[in-house]
Length: 549
Image (cartoon, rainbow, N blue to C red; front, side):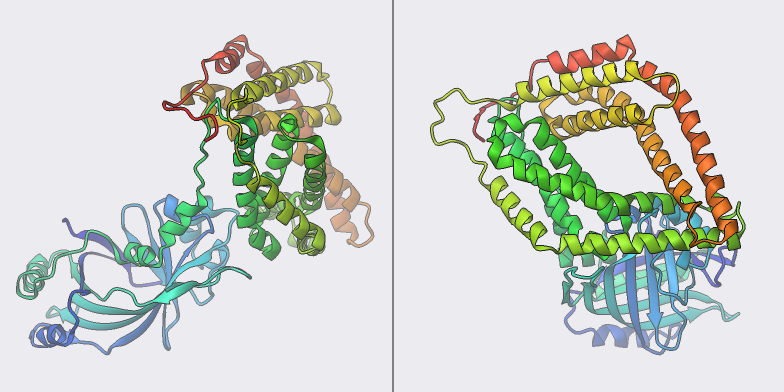
């Protein structure tokens, strides 16, 4: 096992002195009594014991672990009478650290533009949430050269407790556990002989073997955090001849699980992606249920369609304001306008957003929502195969493919009817049709060959992205026009809002011009053949097929 390379920083900024070093980590979990090992290190003449430390390590990531997926690790170190430090480890294993007096929540709370530049593209717009907290007792031995520089260190760590703190109101705290005792051997390049000598002492005399997995990963495994993430991913069991009501119920159950997982975060309101994911699952459920309503009794599903429409209306204002704030708070916007003119606009929008968030929270905690959630869950749990399996049961693939074909044809027809000049209503209707089409494609993706479905989804996504941008810009233009007339803002800010509205109008015109180009690609005969091949292919049917499972 080659020693891991670490780049340690002695000061706050990124351009501080770099000391190239390497380390090995050993588990002490098989050593019930650590006193003999401590005594052995105390006996080494070239090692000097340091004052024992009481440390708190806090690891950070977004709710959906975007830093982990990007190969980044971020943590803070707290020690009595010391300014906390934040550590950043990149994909190469190189570490950087700086002083960070403020507990990070937004990336902007980390006092380093270099840190922010690395992390922000991965996280935006999500905040940092605590993922793992470790209380660690550390005893250290240091070896210094004749100049007094540290060239070798041994760290004996006992993790007294580790847990995942509450990340937002209502979040479950993962139960505290005692962590792994372990030993770290830390050397500096250029002093390999000292490192190898102590490594030999640890591995041969004490009999320890280096770990292949780092302590953070072992700690998360001990808490079962990996298992929690696995449970969130509900594999969709679908095949083309599955009983249609059962198939639709499975798809809707996954969306309902996503709604429940994002509900507490939506109520919290400080991470806009919770609301986004909650809202997407609501809209997907409503669309899929409406498109495939023939598989269920009409009287049964109409109340649910009404409730999903209600939820879509409830979540729209906050989401629209979130998108607007995110757009206006980008550096190119903030740096382009005078603060005294822009700040009143931003504060007004934030105030309005807080009001809408309060209303949304009240509705999501209302009796109506509770009744909906309970009855919807009961309805989904009730989707079971019929007792008499001898009858001719409706299967899912023909129904879905027929509906996808109709929506695709409707999208083409609506796109061809779009006039040359801007027509927001026509674009809006086309956008809704494309959303319905994409929801079905994504929800029932397992019914089709991966190779066959990729090209249609890709062409639809590019087309849909433009329509979504146009809709957001139209909403923002309308909002700014209203804001330019309000007496609650100073005159300079009202004039600025009017300028924003004109700018958004110009962006709409540009997008409308681009529409013909993007639609031409979606409407290309080559694309038509891809869609026809997808919908006319032989359905995927697994071996040992059971239509009711």
